[in-house]
Image (cartoon, rainbow, N blue to C red; front, side):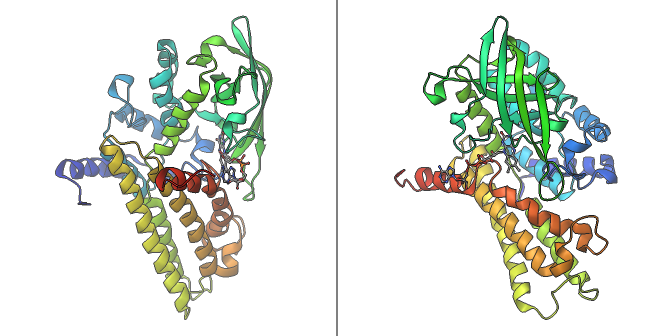
Length: 398
Ligand SMILES: Cc1cc2nc3c(=O)[nH]c(=O)nc-3n(C[C@H](O)[C@H](O)[C@H](O)COP(=O)(O)OP(=O)(O)OC[C@H]3O[C@@H](n4cnc5c(N)ncnc54)[C@H](O)[C@@H]3O)c2cc1C
């Protein structure tokens, strides 16, 4: 494979770089999509980021992957990948969230004309933030066992039940969710897909505070919540298949391994600069040097794995176990980088943001605890290994 950009790709990369250089205010650098609900989390800074959202919306870059007829940029897979790489290199926030990456593409495929009209334009203008209400206390990996009920009553459905781990629900205006409409049908066949206005009476959001002290996700309770029937996406009881479309968009969203490499490079720089003040244990520790070198090599392996997924998508193929390999490798590497960071920074590194003694303002301590969730969110490592074993290696299921 030739890793160099083709001339038109190089020109596009330059355009993105130039745009970021001229338009991205410095104070927004480093705000990322998944930083555990704290000040570094794009969702919690929705109001503040309006200026940046407007610039991206004017450029048509809020939904780079959507077809132009729906107001997207209609970018090719390679263009999206280049854009993601450049945004990561420049620590620029991508603001579309689950609206552009999950519910928008799902509505484009399965939504009615009215649903597309009502919701797509508001996602594109960046006015509306969405959350995903799939997981329940007893249903995560085995999602089809979900128990939240929706019962038809006149022009509405009445929803009762509970969701959990709902990322960003406390900042969201709308939720896309799955509920059981036919409890007697086989489990995959009695589920429907709804869109719920989070201001509806009977919706209660309770933030769950994680180990870093911030609330990235929530419990969401539904008590007799009335949802107009026009908010049902697709047919009643066919919601599982629509949910699978949403999950495909979640898994195939073109990730970028650039962030992992930048983390390792940042750690190496910190380790070199802080041997004197003893915030770095690097001095005289050959094994730590080797470990840092391993992490950098692995970050490049993660990059190659994501190139493989992008190359497949570029050829119109649908990555399956290949996407699982990339997710598994990148999430476990994220944890290894966090462990290496703690070894390098020692006791200072374990301190959390807010402590005057914390190395790098507590970045390493908080990333150590935050990355624990990386191998659970978006499908656990065991589930990814199951996919690689059965669909990739062709091993028997039992
Ligand atoms: C940070 C974070 C953000 C999240 N955000 C959202 C969100 O926005 N919306 C949402 O709906 N959900 C969200 N989730 C939930 C996430 O999708 C689930 O946590 C995940 O699917 C696992 O489900 P579970 O927690 O119920 O664990 P379980 O499915 O109960 O798993 C428990 C253990 O059993 C193992 N296991 C389960 N099934 C198998 C199997 N078939 N083979 C081998 N091992 C298995 C698992 O690997 C795990 O170790 C989020 C989770 C996290 C951590």
